Amino acid sequence: MSYLESLRVFVRVIELGSITSGGRDLRLSPAVASNRIKDLENRFGVRLLNRTTRKLTPTEIGRVFYENARRVIETLDEAEAVIGSYSGTPQGVIRLTAPLGLGRRLIAPLIPVFCRDNPGVDVQLRLSDRSVNIVEDGIDLAFFLGEPQDSALKWRKVADCPRLLVASPDYVERSGLPKGPDDLKNHNCLLLRYPRSPEYFWTLQTDEGPRKMMVSGRFDTDDGDVLTTWALAGEGIANRPGYEVTDHIAKGRLVEILPEARPLPAQFGCLTPHRRLQDPKVRMFADYAARELKKAF
Image 1 (tube, one colour):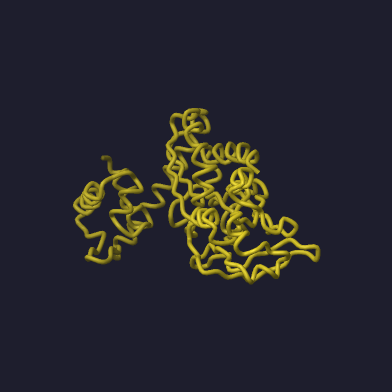
Image 2 (cartoon, rainbow, N blue to C red; image 1 turned 60 degrees about the vertical axis):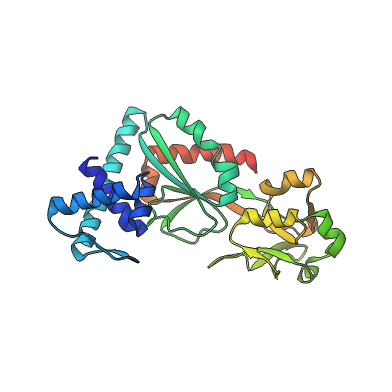
């Protein structure tokens, strides 16, 4: 492994907080990643990391070395992007992230096609319904449902994603059909919840305009697919993206609740650090995904 590749390992280990995570991100075993760090320490004759059984932190010189190594990696990545733009053959890795359900259903199927058309590009997809730090995690492109909050990132809206309230026919038979938004307080609402979750309430479109409804239920989870599974099992009412439940509705496994007062649609788009939007391969994937995903909504 080259000196440059050892630098990449060191930078990702610092950013992700462990040798195991940094190695995994670069498709290396913990042993190989650890050896790369040791090679750097032996090369310079200094300790770059303080290691304990519970924590890994950079030494003072390690922190200084990280800042400079990160700039070197960014400069080389930018140079690689420039060469790719002139040659017309993009090269390198694109790091993507997306919510679990959206990533599985909509983003993942796009990647093999893109990579076949661009054989010099590798794609790493990380899926999570939890919020991620796009800059610290080295993400090139983050697909997103909702309202972006970070003004330091570039937001590209692709489409509005309809959301529907759904429950199983069995649940409706047992618990009744809500006749209006106020009736939701008498129902088991299935909630997506995690630290800083936006779904402690549902905003519905009514004749009087958007109405924020405080809802509650016995179950909550940080995995959106689990909400759909619970709804299919007859456990309550879920607020889900339309692309995830329309097939279930068409086949009678779910019914729409309060179609006259649907939740506000969620914005769907992608976020990227401003500088990375200049990378042709990132821009190409963003354009490709926007074209294909507009069809899904």
